[in-house]
Image 1 (tube, rainbow, N blue to C red):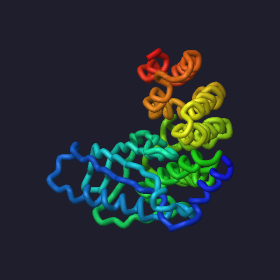
Image 2 (cartoon, one colour):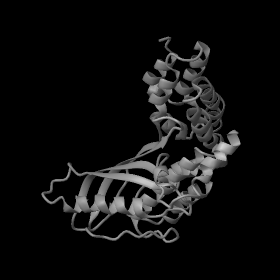
Image 3 (spheres, rainbow, N blue to C red):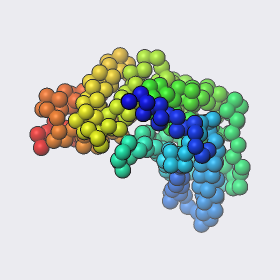
Image 4 (tube, rainbow, N blue to C red):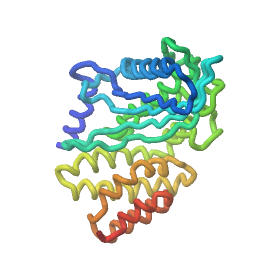
Amino acid sequence: MKKWFVICILSAFYIHTWAQELNAKVTINHTQIQSTDNAIFDNLQSTLEQFINDRQWTNLKFQKQERIICNFNITVTKYDRSNNSFTCKALIQAIRPVYNSAYTSTLYNNTDNNFNFEFQQFDQLNFNEEKIDNQLTALVAYYAYLIIGLDLDSFAPMGGSALLERCLNITYNAQSMNFPGWKAFDNSRNRFAFINDYMDGGMQPFRQLQYDYYRKGLDVMADNAERGRSEITKAISTLLKKVHQDKPLSLLPQIWLDYKRDELAAIYKGKGTQKEKEDIYDILFSINPNQNNAWEQIKGND
């Protein structure tokens, strides 16, 4: 029965009405820029939203309601009109619905501090995956493939491999771009580092965690909260713990816990045995002590 249901879920991507994969909202915050003309920022926002949402990024067929909701919150810190250059940081977020409930779970949430590019008003955005010659479209494509790949990983073990390989391929083809964030081994949190680490063979337990946490854990909690939490406990105690032990320099488990802290605290607060909560606390604290306020909620007896 379980296998049949998963097959049905995955098959939904290939049948029914053709639709794009992403349902993105783009926000451009330009309050730091002294300018009386907002037209360039308004045009950038509408152009990006149209490019992200109207482009068919894969050969998969999504129903309209299956489109992945995501946000690109871009803060402009510097704008040079003379060469059309934007210096920005961007918070990229994506959410995943939880089966049989109104609850949505954060699939990805991270800040790109080098979201820099050139854009001239009324530019037409085009993207060629094998010839990366435009920074803005390369940035968007990278995050589009990353988000879709992570989403597919949450529905089937390693289900997003093909899309994530394309994401990694963008970083290889963008190595010559004169913008920060693409260089191999230049920064442990940059775009190359994130996808290269995620696709490393030693990180397979972390990728398996995505499926076990979402599909075997959260997706069954509406029908059986105890069983769902038990699967999440197992995933954290085995997969997350193992990848942290095997790859202690990887920042991915820490980043993941940064945006899972409140959800995990809610899953365990006042629920489960004291030993279960203390074991989970020990693992989470060892990986990301910065979020200890959330982990303390798990350990408490309330």
